[in-house]
Image 1 (cartoon, rainbow, N blue to C red):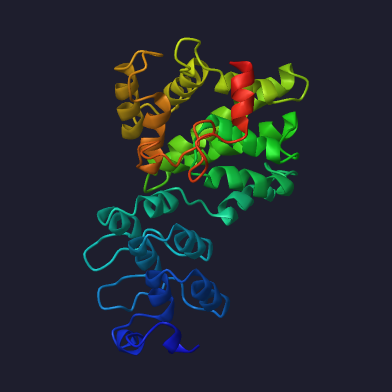
Image 2: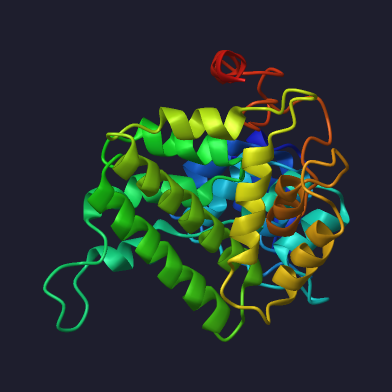
Length: 315
């Protein structure tokens, strides 16, 4: 590997324990990070003087794609530097909130695939292997808009099935319980797992009632109030999801409930239940700029995606 690709300062930096992977992550070189990882670079190496890891440098650089790549390669997000800061804390300190969101919402595919194998005396796995990939994609999304999650279900034919959705939401409930009861309780992931479970259960209910189609659920979530377009159905659904979180002692739950109780449903005042949920799980206020789709909440999209046609036709 030729260090001249990084610049003249690289050799000097190596003297202090900064590996090529760290330097590539800090410089935002996703191609170089990928190449180094393919050739066996230690994703968790932290021989640098101050205990930094490649994930910390990716967070500092604000490169969410590299951050995700390193996590997929096994980067440990709970590692701390010499002053006790994690990669997420360092990214937050310099305002790289997209990286914070990626780190806080990361959930390894291997952890989900545990449920694709029979455990103990069980003859069948809790989760058929064919469902692991599509479900993991939903778990990893940082867009919590229920329309987006329903669309992710619709995009995967293996999920548009009553039996499949039953298995998926049951696994999500177990993961929620694990996140609460593990030694270092992860309230953020617990709330997210519970919320996804609620959306999957809603999809299941509509499949059972609507002859295997989710279109009416999407329309209900998109339908706005005649007077101002406020999505009352969506607001009530998300509030119900928050209130149904089964671990009442969780600080994150109490904070969310306290906020939404202050705002009457449909009053038009901020924050909405969606923004409260997003703030709790991703650490970001929703729609802070003009680069979110007003229909499905996808970042980087036009103001309204193609689903807008569905929204206007059923409003």
